[in-house]
Length: 319
Image (cartoon, rainbow, N blue to C red; front, side):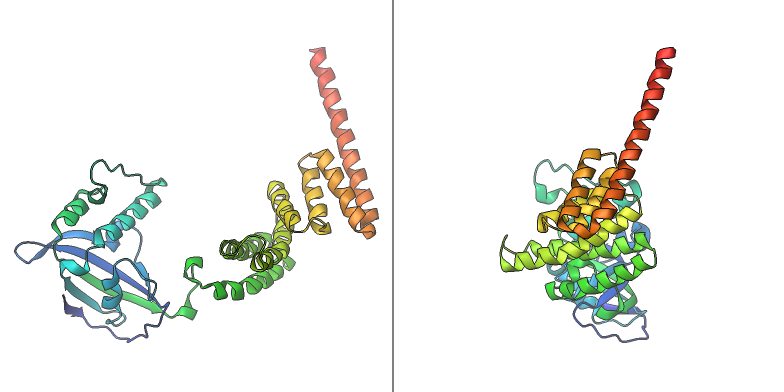
């Protein structure tokens, strides 16, 4: 079903364990009636997405590619002639790669209208014909590099639930260190990544179950840390949103009330700020002096603004 021809020898034989990343360039040719590969369909160097990245053991749609690359060396170039039975899914893969390249080029999603038989309409004439004719294909593959599972950063979809749980405290620790170094934007990225893992994990738990509450409690300190960074970055709307999420988990969280109060004050949500400051002081009396100072500053700010608006109104009446 597959015939291989090596056109350039490789020099390193890698190990292809599960989750190994194989980075390679490919060109795809249609085999014609004369058994010659003259019709170029795709070329990663021309498409614009860069070399293709395949994760071993992740059930990629075109299964034959995993078999092909696992028999190659790094820097090897080989041509594989494949019969129709093993390349049926190629038009779908090709369409996805072309659509991605177009989206990156234009910034717009590709929306194909499929009048008639949906399975025969990819939006690309050569792929539609490929689906109709089902010819053999020739893949010319060049292995650029092979990275073992611990040698590259995994996308979240590649991680098991346990790997996500293991990563969360590490991300939080890195975020805390970055915050102490006043690298607030970098810290936000780490907290956000940890929160995204938790959002994925909670979808697998029944609401109000023990597992669901476990995820919610893990989210709480990350939400608070994220909000503190956003406060330092003067991104007050994000502070309000994330502290409100924290209060949905813990209605008596002092830090959430206090940080949300400061954000409300910065956004001129005066009444909301007062309520949150007072609630923080009620829950933690040791904050009374700080809250009093914040409320006095807020009152002074409001008075100055009212005075300024009054002066502007009088000037308008003069003219």
